[in-house]
Amino acid sequence: MNIAYLRTSPPHENMDCGFQNHGPSAESHCRPFVHGYADVPYHWHREMEILFVLRGSFRLVVDGQTCEMGEDDMIIINGDVPHNSTSISRDALICGVHLDAAHFERMGLPGFSSRQYLCRTFLHSRSFMTKVAPIKALMARLILDQTSHPDEPMARQTVANLLASYVYRWIPYEKSDPAGAQLRSDSRHRIVRIMDTLGDNDESQHLSRIAETEGLTLSHLSRLFKRHVGIGYRDYSQNLRLDNAADELRTGDETVGIVMERNGFGNPAVFYNKFRARFGCSPAEFRRGRRPLKPQSVLTEDDAAEAQKILTAHAATVGKAAELVIGLTTSGRRHIVITAPHNPSLS
Image (tube, helix red, strand yellow):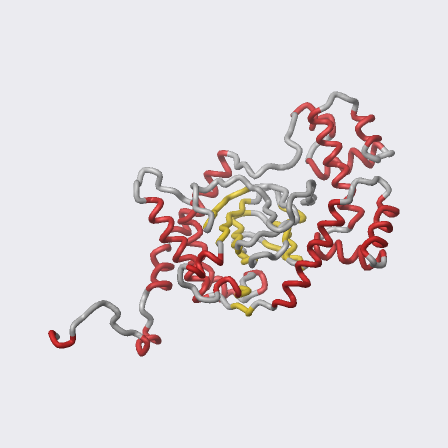
């Protein structure tokens, strides 16, 4: 099982997972992407994130809640909510879109950035899948690019506006809780402080020192860490040491035994088994292949072709999605008025 982790210590106010953008280029207020098997670290960002599983499955931890997602599932992760994936199937294909809610609020969606949207298809009934189908169509159209059309950037901007408008009009939400947001901010920064101090091979003593520094009991700190990161501290620390070992194997020439001992593994059988479980091969095979340290978000040609096939099928219904956003509904006729300039005296 591959465990996402935070390795460095960037500014904590606006952290992003840094996936390569495999969709067409986009303005910062709307960024589509597609990725396959990948490590997603504990992070947050101001933008709303919509994730759609095209193939495979993965476990996502969102603000301390574990979400098991499978093929065709969708989730909206609201802005500034910490999240990470703790495991992901090797056949996974996932697409997503970041929407800058503040931008779309300025564009004419009042209160858009203060809403907490409730969209987790794996928690809803089957009928809810009908409600999110237009979102999938609009996301697909954002990711697919007609490069030969000079008007494509304008078309994509239109689709981004439609996507934000659809979420605003049709997806249930709660008003954000300022007190809860402050608690979430305090908690996530505490977790990042803990992650930033990792590195000692004696996990139990190290965690005890961290608990003392944070003013918490050891058991409380262990529960807090697992709730937010989705994995126990000991397993997290072990994976961090495995990644350090993999980095040394990739870039250095020392024997596997030396690398193993330097990273706190005294039993070769345990090291080999844990290494294979994390990287899918033995340490020697990893070195010979000169594999990258972590699974990358780059898609293979076959993956890209499969993603394009799935997304093209969803994009075929983009017209119906647009109709739900800009069409005139029969239930709203009493609210329909003429806004274009007109002169009643000439009627």
